[in-house]
Image (tube, rainbow, N blue to C red; front, side, top):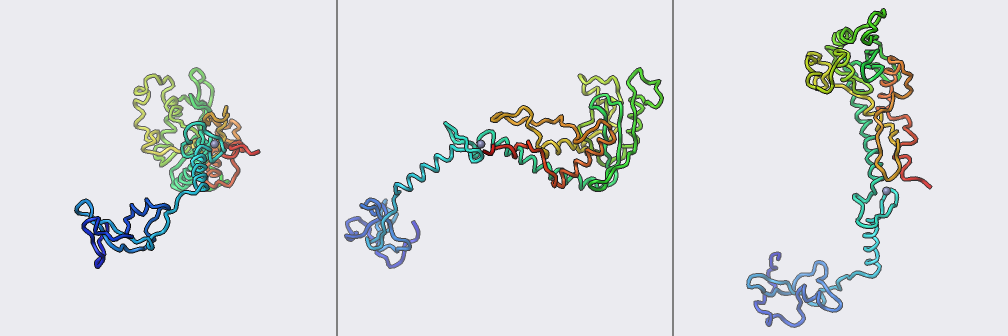
Length: 317
Ligand SMILES: [Zn+2]
């Protein structure tokens, strides 16, 4: 217990304690239960357990202990019951309380909203990085064995256009005698020269595989070590040395068009195959659209998908 107050009598046995002085325990046993009033100073101390003192109070220094009223009890029951109700959509759990007071669907939707907001942060970081010279955008007509590859410098603001640095048409094996078509390895050598000093690359989707397939038209992906063998010299291909920013990574969660096959309470499936918004199939034009999409995400001023999970859930009636 706290320090004993000086000048307050101490009783070493219980029979010395005058009538009308009570310990806290005794006060609480009275009917109605009492407790020392706030700030009350003890009128004495009683020794117990041989080395400890219990404070003693007269009844006029005590107040009734508050007990739970029926209304308070009801409120507690209601609060416990509320834990079973999802704070997002009101769905009721029939057994244990929802984790974080949200049902499974609402947790998925909350996660989708969080990655939507995170996507803007990411896009702003990329847009800032684009201000450094040496960052290029790279586009292909298809993710495997591309037949057209475009490299573009980055526009320096929303709405501006990049400049096409190279636009390569690649032959498939057997098509080589068409004029103007390059073999994959020749196209790759040109890219390697253009991008060797790149400080960053922007693409809609990952393009590593497409680039390796240019250099090695008969690459065997079943043997990844062999597939990558000899590619180390192309510094720009390695994300750890030259960062690659994949715009679809930011666009998909930002736009929120993730409801393919979605019906609550099933998980939300993010559709990563979303094409560049407004894509026409022309590589250079679509690459420009992809970069424009990056600015749209960063600025966050445009509406997102009307089917975005956080817009359609919980359903409004
Ligand atoms: Zn819910």
